[in-house]
Image (cartoon, rainbow, N blue to C red; front, side):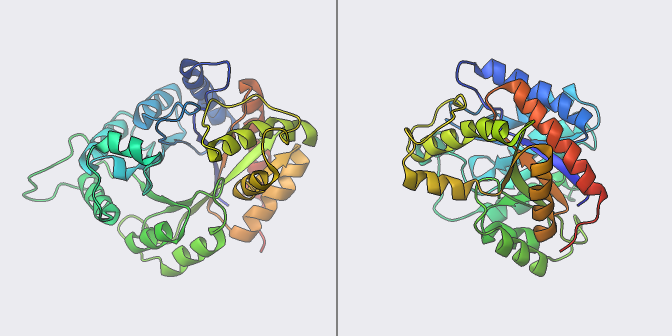
Length: 335
């Protein structure tokens, strides 16, 4: 593994505001740069009271301005919500302001419910235009095409690195076909991780953007001084995910010692499976789990994420994780 990175959804904790969440994101990004994280991604979600990163490009600009060397980007932009030209202009502007530091991850899902998806774009085509939209976007970010009637300014010639995101075989196949790097959302949908990575690596075609397969694998990481404290911190995300499954999205709940009174056992089993690609505990505990993940899946980069209610505890968790991951980057992974 070459690098470790961080995915931030700008969580809005119960009792706090969106403004607090965005301020926390900037503070966490500055801390993450000091911890040694290679890149810092923010994700587009809409109509979610507990997530403040809906306007991902705007937040990325704030994070990039508050940091100096760390790569910053979208993990990702849900391309069905946007015209490719506008995405090229937004991320081309960011790349012009912060040269060599901006990433653009592209997702195929709308990242929200269908009513909100319609509100975002107004017109929903029946056919899947994602591959064509990706190709169009790559064209806008590349060198000027002779005689082009539509150009992205800013954007043209910036060659912003584009990643394909996914949690199924579709994204793996598309990333391999285009010869683009691939990031798998195993932090909340790990079921097809092994098969998707195999498909991507086996089918990859070298391209002007990438000579060989490159993979990010995402994982939840909740670290604290003790295993019990880390499990307690993680309960906020478990409860938030369960409430989402029950159709009750809201702000990030305070941690609970016992969730059995609110989450039925059958649902808890589903949530546990969805969030199973994670490491929770003290530094020693998460080291063993992260080493296992890296050895089995051989990612070029591990991207960690955690929704923790208390901001100071969240920063500390990512700090502990960085100490462990820096050791694992230096040690060769074994199968």
